[in-house]
Length: 321
Image (cartoon, rainbow, N blue to C red; front, side, top):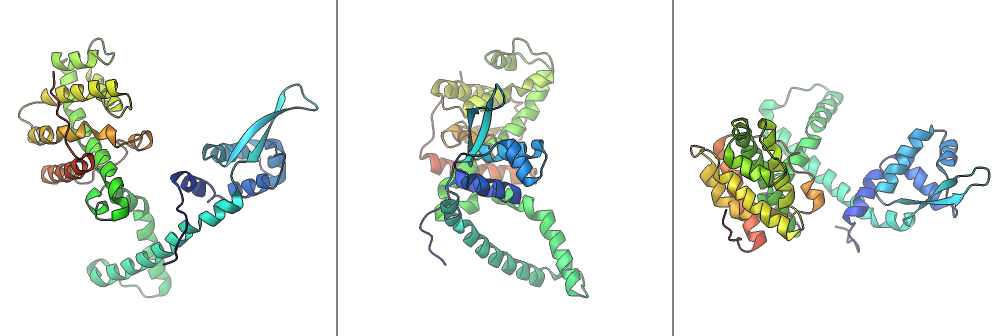
């Protein structure tokens, strides 16, 4: 395997994704070669594109830190003119991004081997194909249908990530995110009914988050504010959210088959903010839980809680008031 002297950073990975678009790549190349920079109008004329299209590309490049803009006094107009310049060393970046290319080469090799294993081991679901084109089209269909979902499944399997030394610290964050995603979704469903009934205990917690009076079931969404504070870097907000979440779980109906399990892992759930940053927190509730059976859900909770516990080293002792 080729040795790489420098890993691509997450920010550079975002730049790499942005440059998968050939037009954006060409825009950045041209700006890198222009000492004074270029205006959006000049770029639109150069690439024979409409101004809104160019502006969309420039906005994306600016978001990933590839370009910067500055104003100059216009020669023929009274308002300043905005010029865009490259803010990254394009040549240096392309050299570093060879890591991504190397990863793609190995990914293709491993994926090809996995496909051959699938064809060999899952013969009962493989159709009889009469020509190479049919095989090609069938495999393309499978890959297109699973491309995004496979990535999502991988992100939801912290127990496999923790087995990979380089990704062990990431596994703790994945466990925290998955645990919050699963448990808060279940709690929200129950709070929905309590809010509809205008439960007085829920009203007390909601009041601390700006809900003066429970009006209908939508007030159960106060839990989103609790979770937001739970992931805050502000210690006082996080402590208040930890107590509030404990109170919300405590008020859930006693007959719930999973309530006790949630209470057991709650000391780790409430510390998720110690691992998650703003970017990962933004992914909360984006992942669909495929298997919602109670046994699978509880097993998933316990596995994630164990990984989260190890990542946190020791549980936080707190009491709901």
